[in-house]
Image 1 (cartoon, rainbow, N blue to C red):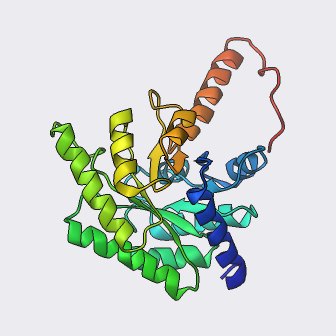
Image 2 (image 1 turned 60 degrees about the vertical axis):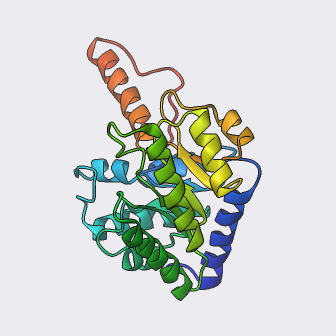
Amino acid sequence: MTEAPSALSAKAATLARLHSAPEILQVVNVWDVISAKTIADIPGTTALATASHSIAASLGYEDGENIPVEEMIAAVGRIASATDLPVSADLESGYGDPGDTVRRAIGVGIVGANIEDQMRPLADAVAQMDAVIAAGRAEGIDFVLNARTDAFVKAGDRDPAEVLADAVERGKAYLAVGATNVFVPGLLDEHAVTTLVQAFGPQRLSVINVPGSLAPSRLQELGVARISYGPWTQRVALTALANSARELLADGQLPEGTLPLN
């Protein structure tokens, strides 16, 4: 283990408090050491969260558990070692063994994680969330599980009311086995957010903000615990890189105000 159990336990407790505070927790997702250090140095950053899509892309893999688990653990471990802030890792669906994957992640300094249900049968999904909580307990920390349901991500053309009901049912089941929060990615409107907060309780819903999402201030008013940004932060960086390259190749110059952040 990279840190003493007491230090990891303290970081896990800090991360849990950040989720339960009335002030919404915003995590600007990172994918490597330099992005982690850059975001950690921004005033107002209280925790870091990795984006599995971004880590996979940076290492040449397609999203969706195509990256070997060893590479993902190594990547999130380097990020955790580069900061004193608590780090939550996006560990997809656990790479075939969520309990063992989380045990390994704790071993490199991770104190929280997203775990996807991928809309498996509910009993199977609950079992995988329960295994994550048990792994944290076995390692001596109250692991901060941001249990993800893919009800909206995999909704297709289903009735939106049925999709929302699925998210509620699954989220309640994950909270019942010890999840800290329920992560419901998707472009959620105010009705969906309000329904989910009422079902789970205040500061129990975690969302992703994408173009068109509700503003962070409104999500805080509605009782949301956490906002993340997934692969969009890497896309922002790559868009800036692409735009700069176009300018340079057209006889331009580097953008004014560029900082030596690396």
